[in-house]
Image (cartoon, helix red, strand yellow):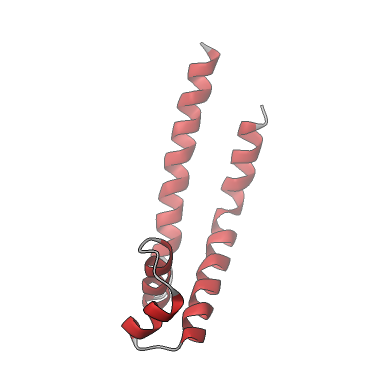
Length: 88
């Protein structure tokens, strides 16, 4: 039925969003990408990341801010799609 159609579309949209997130993260500079992955996927604290990479905590914060800004810019159109899809 109609519910199945929405479910399939939702799954497709979710997969597309996941691909775009990966693409956006991969487009970051090497150090920025490493910092962001350690922060968000390995759940490490800024101090741990700074020590591991031999950079300052402020540099870690800067990289996280830059990565989040890039993700926000790159994924804005998908957020609008998701909102409109789930508003139906």
